[in-house]
Image (cartoon, rainbow, N blue to C red; front, side, top):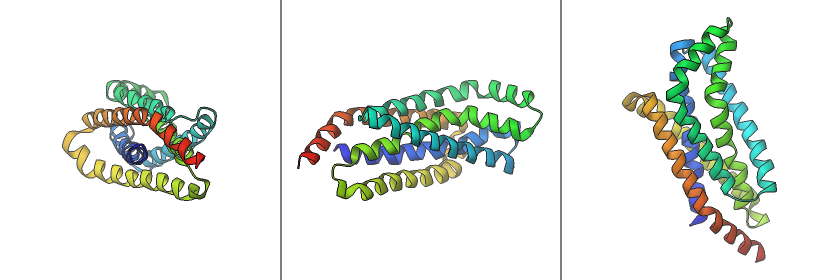
Length: 206
């Protein structure tokens, strides 16, 4: 069951990643509006964070090949999300007042909200790909499946959060819910770590 659970976590963490981007727009709106500058900053920071996460995840898993790395990263992302509803108003107000340029202010604010948790979530895919490959002949399909499932989760997170989650439960509750989901995914990844290692060893030995 380890491999299906990893795919499930790829989907779930993909939902959390883009879902929180949509929620972050609601945190920024009272201070920086909802115009093109805000969305450009959000998208740019998310892409930057994912880039950093890919590099970090790939670097770490080559040195410490264990799925527990992904579990730790998901837990750190969840912890950051728990702090956002508590600290966001104070931090965003200070950032708004500190920068005369709206563009600079919204970029800094987006980094404060998104850079850390999205970087942590971004480490998942390279870690999962490295550990899920048990036969060099399936490298392409394994990598494609991980990134495909994760991206489908991004789509569900974007639409589901914008159309249903935020209108029905609000930004703070949604943030706490995504934190809880990330914690559950981290627990599943931790439990799968030992089993996946056994399956991988068996696959290579064949």
